[in-house]
Image 1 (cartoon, helix red, strand yellow):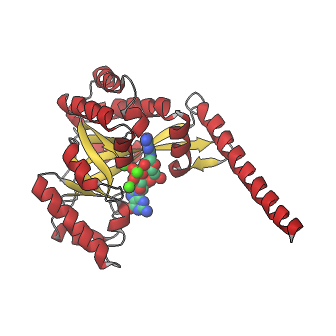
Image 2: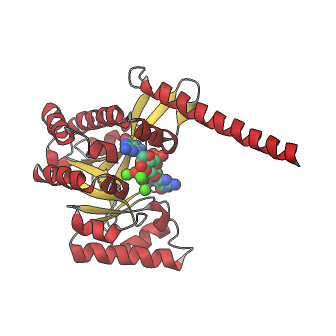
Image 3: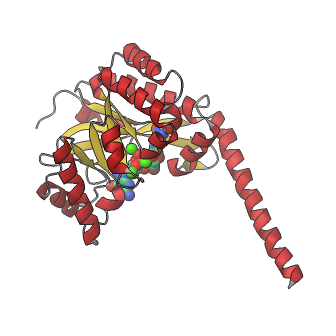
Length: 275
Ligand code: C2E
Ligand code: CA
Ligand code: CA
Ligand code: CA
């Protein structure tokens, strides 16, 4: 029994060692990903629930690793955050996204995910101002998506940055709404312009009455606070119908389009769209 225990321990030790090596290897390769042209942006449409008209896009980072192929953001973003690499990656994403959006014929919004470390880093607001200036993108066309974890890291600094961004006209959306610890008090304490209901609630809307009740409550909350609500992860016509009946204004999800290179959305960003 004693040797068996030791064997089990060694097995776990080996598995943990492998996991640590894997993380280090991803972190190492991520460090060179910008210079090696391995990063790209995927764009996902955000549409009006009633008309289906597209008002903007969320930008999602993609990493095409030479050996691993497409690495999911759920795997590499946390590593980028823990290693601090997210600062460089985030600047790259922001610059590329603003540059791209500034070329569009239609004045659509561009929503960019901003992580905790970025929001509370020195010079973040100045960086946004400089990027808007360089790319000539009007500030009201930029929206930043912030999760609650970004607020708990350093609430005072986060608040200060958000207030300054709001003052220059940048829009602020609370991302993954409902999945955090104190969504309600955070909504009141920080200057949000929009609530983004997390995909997990939308996808359970038909199977689970609690999820439907939560979505209805969030929509009521948005109405009460005068904040528009966008539903993420809308995949089916039934989900969209529910959202329409409950008064949700905006939606995003595979039903309207999967995240894809902007070239796949050329008709949407061009001026002569027939509506
Ligand atoms: P998120 O901000 O909640 O983004 C939405 C995620 O849901 C994206 O996953 C998107 O591809 C996926 N999605 C959209 N519509 C649907 C749908 O109808 N059904 C399903 N099943 N999924 C849908 P993705 O691209 O894998 O990104 C995962 C997360 O990685 C994002 O979650 C975000 O937190 C983070 N992320 C991605 N790009 C960036 C970035 O540039 N910066 C930062 N800080 N985080 C990023
Ligand atoms: Ca997001
Ligand atoms: Ca989400
Ligand atoms: Ca998220």
